[in-house]
Length: 439
Length: 112
Image 1 (cartoon, rainbow over the protein chains, first blue to last red):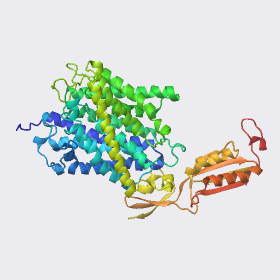
Image 2 (cartoon, each protein chain N blue to C red):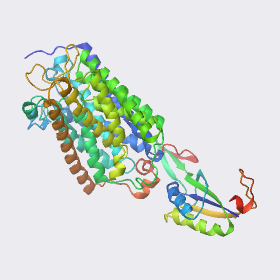
Image 3 (cartoon, each protein chain N blue to C red):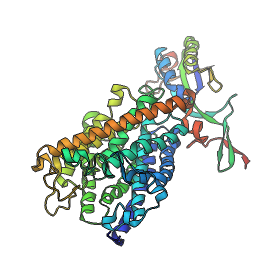
Image 4 (cartoon, one colour):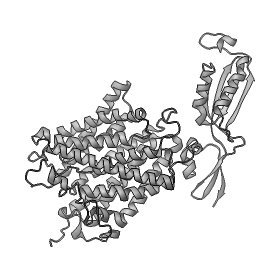
């Protein structure tokens, strides 16, 4: 067996990238927290924070093993294999780039954490905190881990899976299916079970702190460099490719969202800029290392327009996806995943990345780059599988929790504000308080 | 003329506004207020220190109306703001000696 050879440069980058991605979840807490009303900002931020707590512990115990352990039926890995992260560097997921096993496990932990936290935006202002905690544990185990295993752990949607042999290898560099389509489809299933907030579509529910939203978007963007460039698992030219694509696609998406708003509503808003940034980051995630700059700009721009239009659908169809997890993550996640089928390219010297590089006749070049329709069909199939799996399993989990713990706080608690109802504290009500007891 | 003042739960404001519009009221002044009646506030604990928050957020609505409109407007506010629980608030009307519209200089009922 080949011996593990530590590469300190790559390891230093992956430790940095892991820390960057972990920062995205508190960033998300600000992004979401600013968008709700002042009476529910703490609960909104707490749903992100507690996701770090729950998933962080479960990932170290069995999550990593159940995702990257030996394959069981193409759906999950063996949860006992690396239980408690007892793992040798010879089994490192990033063996090829000389990054130790524990660093690889840390990097992957941060992905599981943010994916769970993303869903919380759909159910703002109205759900029991305890039910959310149990949901986070069940969802990461029954939905995130299987999808991550299927795509990245050697399962159905991976390099050696049945789709790769029938069509081509689905390209998902950093998590278009695993993170964004997954969270978006789950959000849709969840809001259909949980139901609308009292007064949805009638009472004003405008964002209470747009500077928070912009701060959150900025932190997400910063952290996303770890997410996308880190997904190369090495500090090299392909990581640079992912970095530059992540930037230009996001810039294009922000501009596209602002222009869409200007024409539709008469003004380009700060909330639109922050939302456009996130839509662009979502869309480029699966494509970051497999398209050139021109492809990135188009993917970003299409995502910006598509998500700007999609956020209005919840009012039309009457589902209360409070902070547009469906409109932004599902829609832009599908845009990015599918457009790879048009724009994938491996121009010489471009530092682009391929799953199963060196294999013959695997599609991979996109339709616009002379590769035919194979890769496009592959991407659509992969997106569909992720949507259906996530939606169905999440639906079942949500129904089970509805029947046992229940999802909703009372209408009165919702009207008075969820912060005091479930956390016993308030963010901004300082007037007239007196200290009554020091314990 | 009368000044009708209401202090209500913040989340009832929208319904009260619509009720006032249906009752023919064309303008009002709304401000954020803090206070308590029989409700008293609630306690919050931060790192072991317990705080009593006596004053809870309320919304104050002020409407100037003619004498005969005072009772229907008061009733409209009560009807829309009521949840039946402690903390729903109060509405009262006081006589007003004179009202002037700044833009035109009109006085009395014409300025309402």
